[in-house]
Image 1 (cartoon, rainbow, N blue to C red):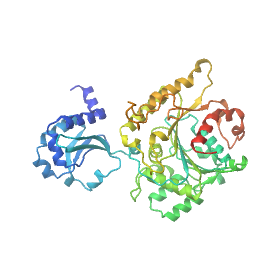
Image 2 (image 1 turned 90 degrees about the horizontal axis):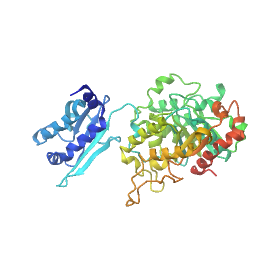
Image 3 (image 1 turned 30 degrees about the vertical axis):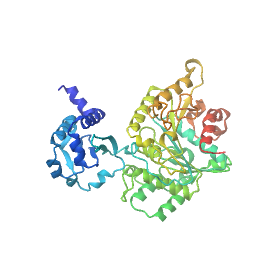
Image 4 (image 1 turned 180 degrees about the vertical axis):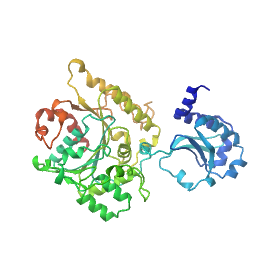
Amino acid sequence: MSSMQRLQGLLDWESVERNLVGVLRQNPQSRHLGVLLAGEALILVRNWYGQLVLLLPCSRDELERSPCALLMDELKKTVGSLALSPWTLCRDELSDAASYWTDRSLLQLFNEKDAAGKVLTLLLLERQDKDRDWLTRPEHIETGATKRCIFFSVKGGVGRSSALTMLAIACAQRGKRVLVVDSDFESPGLSSSLLPSGDGQTAYGVIDWLTAQALGADRTSLERMALEHVVAPCPLNARLALPGQILVAPAYGKQTQAYVAKLARIYRQSQGGKAYAQRLNDFLLTTEMQHEADITLFDCRAGIDDTAAAAITQLQADISFLFAIDTHQTWDSYRLLFKHLRRNPVLFETSKADDAPWELRRSLRLVSALTPQEHGPYVGYSEILQQNAYDCFCEIYDEDSGENRDAFAPAPGDTDAPHAALRIQWVEAMRAFNPLIEPVQLTDPLNQAAFADFLDCAKALLEVR
């Protein structure tokens, strides 16, 4: 085996998964394995380093007495240098064995019946510190009556925060109470453009609330913290005489201590066993209720990040805006993300109560950010972006054979589809967008025109009238 082949054996993880499925499908001993497992699943665990071990829902004695030894050897050979030693672990050799078979992040790789009707299932359990929520099955969560809107981009510097600010103002102008949450924890900044430094800041931030909850703070204390210490009104409320209100929950406050140390811990489960996504929802629900918010605008960190994963796939937002500019880097990044999402089809199933169905793909909407004027080299820019967007979103659309009425396969020209871009025009004045220092930016006719298409469509999607 050449050095390149050895490297491929370490790096081609999806190929290994496909080859394992091929062995289970074709090896005659698989029928004996189906009998041994009695309808329960095999679990392939990928550890923190990417190495693999196979868990079986039977005892070691039952496995050794079964005729499956050669099949286990062939599976190990298929995995190659990624196989741990021992390669197999049985239920009676595991501590808290039940937790493996009930983990919410299990991903189905194989599920078929043999000729005798025995079901053989292979599930994948990823052990990873970050980004687990991208493929975690959404649960039914309590979201209340507040409309939720996520702002996300795979690349920074695309005007995401500026668009959020403009939408917050537009909604408040219609009398709405708008909660703005700065969840770009690694690079907080949105709240700085909406809250003045010093006395205008909150005492604490979202990071502190999540930390207090993880350390076991009681519900009453967390409710009071959300009401009095984590949210502050934006000065633009008075300056623009807004009929509604913009309320800002910053990532940190003026009394926040050890911010980086807290940041390093927020993604883990709480002591009570709550996952990060559940705790984010707890913060939102508590804060929305305490401040009677009509709309929440949730700003994520750019890139394929834990908070974005939780927000887009788990918080069941009414709309998630995906910002894009027409570059190869943008589409390559979104395509990587969409291919990853496609690995778990369960993500595309309806997961809310019958009276309020929610499905991930239908909550997405593309935003054409920094859209240039169509002259010179930019003639045809929007048409090209739209075609590239459709090609990219096809990664998460269903194939349309015409036989499945439930298939989600929007046409290229469908103006209500996730790939149908809402346009924000590029204007030079937005390069240094700072509404607290220069509120005239908010009323400048050129700036208002630049955001008109986005704001009109966003308000309609959020049912702001």
